[in-house]
Amino acid sequence: QIAFLNGDFLPLEEAKISTQDRGFLFGDGIYEVIPVFQKKLFQLDAHLDRLRKSLTAISMQDPYSDEQWKALLNDLVNRHPWNDQFIYLQVTRGIQWVRDHTPDKDLTPTIYAYCNPLKPVSESILQNGIKIVTLEDIRWLRCDIKATTLLPNVMMKIAAKEQGADDAILIGRDGQISEGTASNVFIVKDEVLLTPPLSDRILPGITRMIIEKIANDHSIKVIEQTLTLADLEAADEIWLTSSTKDALPVCLLNNAPVGSGKPGPIWLKMQSYFAQAKHSLMQA
Ligand code: PMP
Image 1: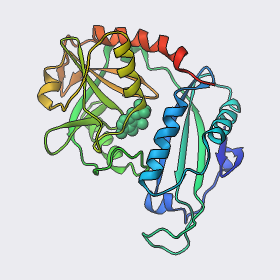
Image 2 (image 1 turned 90 degrees about the vertical axis):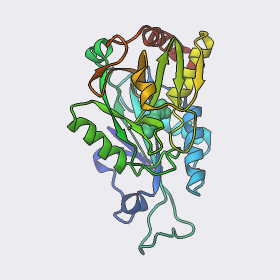
Image 3 (image 1 turned 30 degrees about the vertical axis):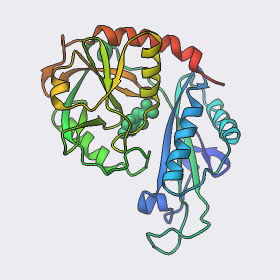
């Protein structure tokens, strides 16, 4: 496997960063995960746009132009044998020798990317869905930034697994559903697709955006509105969406079946629309 680090391509095991990197010491950085299908980067412009928004939010500049990103990421992808892969890409504020929360001026950002093979979602999940518990959302109030600081997400994932679930749907202290630990939430109620509106409580998921677009193209009504546990409990279908898994059907919520207890008809339709759309939405 090959990594990209600060302008160079090198074997993944040889990629090293300084212990003084602010990404390591403070979690002072942002990231993206970009899926690649048939060697083509999916929705690259949307990912680069979100990357830039995350950087702006933490007062950093994008180190590269879109053209530079496109060239280097395509180069990285083409150094690997897999048709379907995903790119992990991280930019941190860089190396600082004297400890200070305040970043030094003119730091050189650390830019890192590597690829993993993209595994298809298992047949058993496609047939039977996943198990979810609801947990209190213990994160900060800037979840719209794709920050590398993922400790709460890791803790909530561990807590979900300890309860015998695959993942968790997070609920704020005010009772509003935010998202999954690494995904956005949709519910289907009476054939209408509902999802929480964009805010500082959720990541603006690229998959969320695509699903809304596909739904519009196929006359499935989408409403962005705040959702509560009661909405989840009354839902006909629940989905979790993310770049590496598309939409996953949730069939058990806090040990109770969701709808029929099997992946629902709207999800099945969306699966086939999504597969069709992948071809037209892909870019070189
Ligand atoms: N929310 C969170 C917290 C995530 O980590 C992710 C996955 N990166 C998402 C939502 C889904 O975003 P996307 O569809 O862009 O992968």
